[in-house]
Amino acid sequence: MARAEKIIEADVQIDPFVVKLIAWGRTAIAKGKSFKVFAVTDDEPDFDPPKSDIQREKFHAMIGDIQETGVIVMPGRKIILKNYSPEKCKAMLVMWFCNEIKELNDEKIKIPNPPQSFDCPLTGETITIRPSTIKWGKKLTRVFVEWLYATGAMAGVKWSEEAIEAYQSYKEAQQ
Image (cartoon, rainbow, N blue to C red; front, side):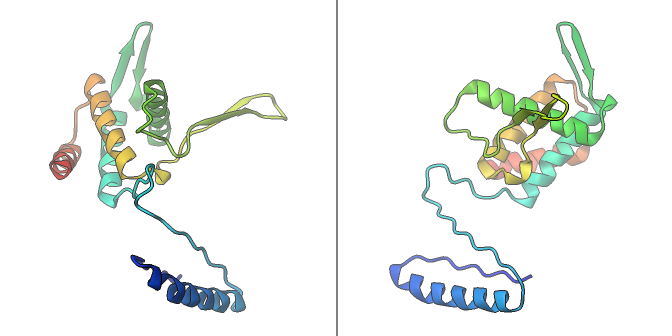
């Protein structure tokens, strides 16, 4: 796989880059390969740069601790998260987060791929597709990490050293 990136800051840079891009694309197609082209601008009001690996590692460490030691108690319900696989626990946390964001109705926080539900035409069963955190940018991930910390605290989570260190360094980096 090849990758090319170019930051274009002036009008005169566009044409030479496009000429090279076209040549590169034609070469790939001639070899029977496909190629993907995308452009990103950072002045769009909804632009959210991709999350970092560090952010991803931090929220996964937190989700692991929540799954291991979290107990959510509410009237008539006690949810022991250890009773769910890590994958199911993450799915529930992501859905709960998305539902809370939707209820907030804050136009500054947008889920790029909100949950979708539909009825299976064969069985009539309702199928829900949870958002994939892969598509979340830095801003949304920052909100998610804060939400995970608050949710974990309310659920009596015993944070591991890894999660505590990750959260502390994450908080320091945000200042």
